[in-house]
Length: 210
Image 1 (cartoon, rainbow, N blue to C red):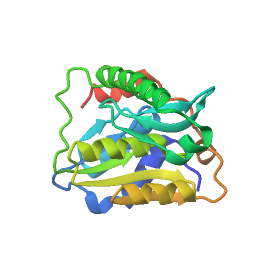
Image 2 (image 1 turned 180 degrees about the vertical axis):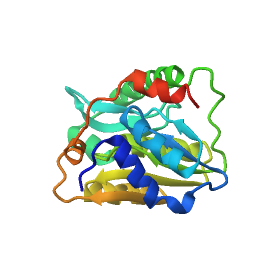
Image 3 (image 1 turned 30 degrees about the vertical axis):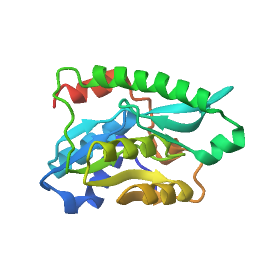
Image 4 (image 1 turned 45 degrees about the vertical axis):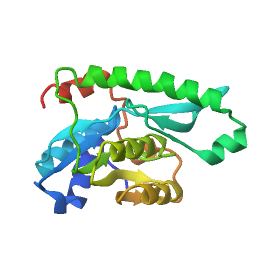
């Protein structure tokens, strides 16, 4: 399955989520940056409010691009215990990176949600949207954080995922809607004809219209 762009992916997800159309006490939460483009289409099509959560990846020592977990603006983190054990990562490193990336996540959230009232998801169903799963680190951290905020149900909705990550997300969330689970997965971008970078300005334009 190939998507034209993130807008097309969002519209396709909305069809799969049609049972939640105009559902009471339900909202869509996107993960910046690309996930917000997808989430907007889902929210608009289902006539639901839109908000965001800002997890940040935590990289491995000496290889920051290799995610061992992620943390949200609230400080709630998901850390892969197997990777920590295999790489011999100590608690001091994890504590330092969690604090550092949580601060950056909070700064990003303030930028995108400036002037908005605090996010309220207590006893609500959350449709958590991203433009695709790879390791799923940021989505896992978001799930942990949203549960702590009191979400009654979390539905993760993504256009594409590898099978192993899909299984891991199913174990954490109440439901996973993944349009294409591909054993040959290599990167999220391979499933989009147009996977151009989403900028902060793109996200701000969406958030300022809410």
